Length: 261
Length: 368
Image 1 (cartoon, one colour):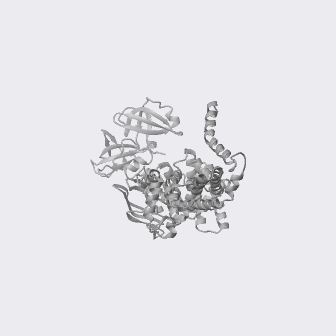
Image 2: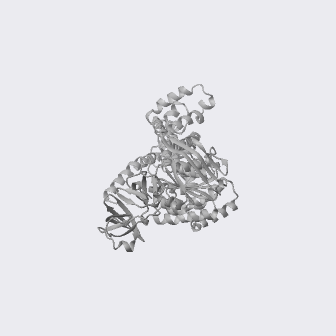
Image 3: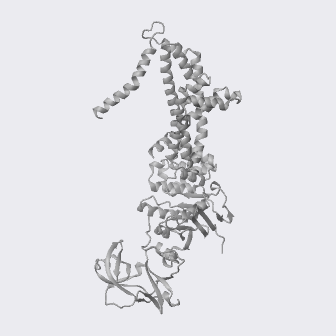
């Protein structure tokens, strides 16, 4: 590697690491004296009931969003690639809408549209919020899955499976899904990261999620906020790694093959 | 006449304004091997896909063993199919690929294992059963695909240009194996190819298709020796062709009178196409003009084909292609003036009519 490459690598590492190290140093200061170094802020976070409660809500919401998104988009994109490839461009256009429409506009619209729906949907994060997050995750899920489907020969694999006696569902589960596993995992990671950090919609719709808790701590506590930020960063990464582990355990070879194509 | 096992009755299929199939009729007995042969776009793959159930005809029927399966979905037809390439499931080993159809049919594990092992041995891949498709060569992948198609004990085996992505040596080797296995299992087989050599070498019957129609169907020997249409004559093998007019006891070609047996019984003045295989043309030194059936010209090219060498002889008003033994060709270098003698027997005459497909200026390439 050329010396200039090391310089750029160092600059890149500094860009990512300096804020983290600064946050770490900040989080180690005493909340009463302001001096270094104590782990008390981390203890405060861990012993805070709201921390675990909101973390659980956000994590479950992320999982729900991932499951709903995969259940909707995998068969849809499969069908589009197989039967109506011309529709792909139309769906890709719609997938860009969540990027273009600001979350604040979206949440106002969604609140109006769903006003009057039953409480189990409108008043629950598992209903309204999950629905909004599926829309928010749409582009990430679509473009990840679309790339996965384009990397395999959907037509031939489907026809080969059918000629051997398999139904659509069997073909989808046993042949198609294992071969787009890497793409589905990528979509799932992005969705997880989005949901774990989404603030605007949750705040305006008055749901108490993990990002709302972080914001609350930021406003009311000084140094514990640093500890909480770092912990949320670590938790999100741990969640992604666990998804990767679960996904790879059974589909490692498929992912390797898909990558080799 | 015994009832055909696979019967395609008056199949029609249009794609917009293009007639992909225009009244296909094929009857195939049980255990027979038929090749659908033709250039790209002639409708052969469409016909195969309709038999497989991946496409539906606009009109006509597909019968298997007397039962109409035209509207039966592909997963319920019990047909094994081998595709051009890349059809193995990448997430499964060779064994799992072959086992797939049996798992779908919920066959017991012991029975599955035995059948998979037997089939992988049959295709010569017993040693590679635990390899993934990306760890297999193209030829090995197609062998696995063949074993996979055979695993379900299909009523009809369908092969869609299975060798087209392979190199020449593997292609010859594998086509012989396909035929060996087909004969061993006695399975009714429909094979699609654009390679006439492939079709002629392994089939019981060959059907040459053009423009969504079957031009001619027959045994490989019939197709080669007695082409029924100018298109078939052009497509199968290399053929010299001369236009001429029937005269008493022969054909007049641009003032040269050719004594051709096949001209007898034809009306005088009939426009005909004279078809002569290169291997039947005798080439030798000129002994003066005017000898019967002799066209005089210069050797302009020599193409070495192994045991024979192909000579292109250009004379006044006619080009002749002749295959001569390579040893003899050494004495006829480019530039030599030679006499090409057309045989009186074995020459095929076809009536030239306006409703027949137009011939290409040059013989059609036999793309591989």
